[in-house]
Image (cartoon, rainbow, N blue to C red; front, side):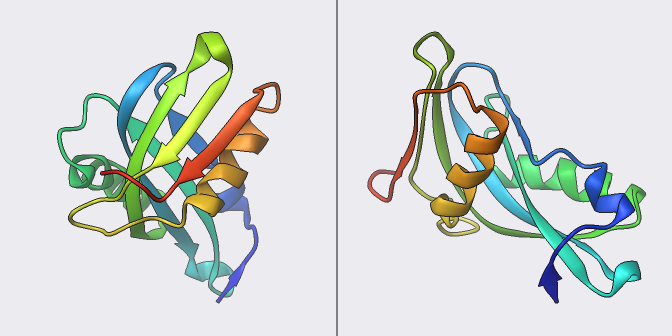
Length: 125
């Protein structure tokens, strides 16, 4: 399996997070096994979610409808300060473990190129 793209994967946005505030997020590996097992990582984070699994349940269903497989590879929290153009990624998920925040930060930097600070810390819950 290799990171890459396919027509199905290229139609999925890399990042969907709330515009502001502190909320749970998950890092998901989305797999298109119709194209030789290519995959990409996507980031999803929303304040409506009480648990990391609430986000994954919704995204997993969406990916199934698109004919894709998915695997939640970890989670954490995001502090998004739109007025300051800053995002901090930190913490972990009790159910899925700590996401590789460095992957999350790279995805966020591509989605928010005008932000002055997008960083992570492995501290905190």
